[in-house]
Image: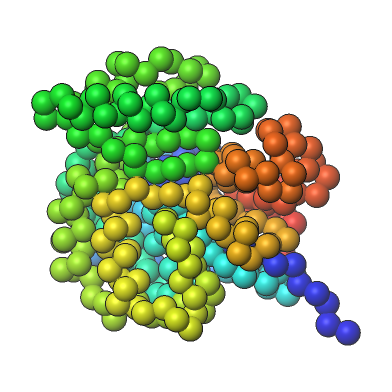
Length: 349
C-alpha cells in the first residue's frame, strides 16, 4: 500500500534573509548539492563576480558585501534552491509554490518555469541592475499590534500619510509590499525622509529602513524593468511543472501558462507594481489546502508575515499570535527550513 504524502505549499524567501547568523548556510546543509553549487560558482566566476562559496565561507559576515544586490540575490537563491532539493519528496508532495518579492524569481526555478541555471541568470542580472541603479529605498511599518491583531484605522491613516507626502514637491512614495502584518513602503530619498519623520516609533524597531534595498515594486523601477526586458529573453521561461501563485495572487498552472505572459509579468508588473505577498499566501492555502507550509531558507524572518497573513483570514482558526505559537509547539503547520529543529522534520540529514 502506497504511503500518503503530505501536501505542501512551498514559500521562497526574498532579499534580506541571509544575515550574520546565516553565514556558512551552504556549507552547513548542502554537501549533497555540491555539484549544483559548483555550477553556480562557475557562472559567477565567468561574470567576474565573487563566487557563492567564497561569500558563504567568509571568515565573517560583511553587511556591505553580503547584502549588496549583486551578491545577496544569488546567494539567497542558492540557499533556497538547495533547500528545495533537500525536501524529502517521498514524504511531501509539493502542490504549489509562491515567494516574497525576489522570492518570486526563486519560485520560477522551484516550479521549473525556468531551468535552475537560467533562473540564476535572471536573479544575477536583476541583482546587478538593481545594485547599479539602487534607486530609492524601503521602509517597513506594522499594521498589527504585538499580538498580531490588526490595529483599527492604521492602514487608512498610513495611506492618508502617503497621499500627503506625495503632494509635496519631488516626493514619490508607494506601497512596495503587502507583507502580512506589515506594509513596506518604497520611495525616493526625499519621500522616505518625510515618512520616517512623521511615523511614530513603535515596538522599539519601527519605522525600519532596509539597508541596501532599492524602491522595489514601485514605478521608480521602470528603468530596471525596461533594461531587464532587453537583457533577458522570453525563451528562458517555460510552462511550470508545479502551480505558481504570483504577487497579485494570480495562479500560473502547468498546462495553461503562456511563457511570454510569464516573462512579461516577471520583468514588468512584478518589478514596478505592488507585490501582495499577503494575498499570495492566502490564495495558496485556499486553493491548495496544504497540510504543511514550507518556507525555504536562508533566514527565519518570513514566518511571522506568513502567520499574520493566515490570521487575517482565520485559517486553522487562528485569531492571534498565541494561536499560532500553540499550534507550532505540537504540530507545526509552518515549517521554516532556516530553523534547524524544524528542518529535520522535512529534510533527511
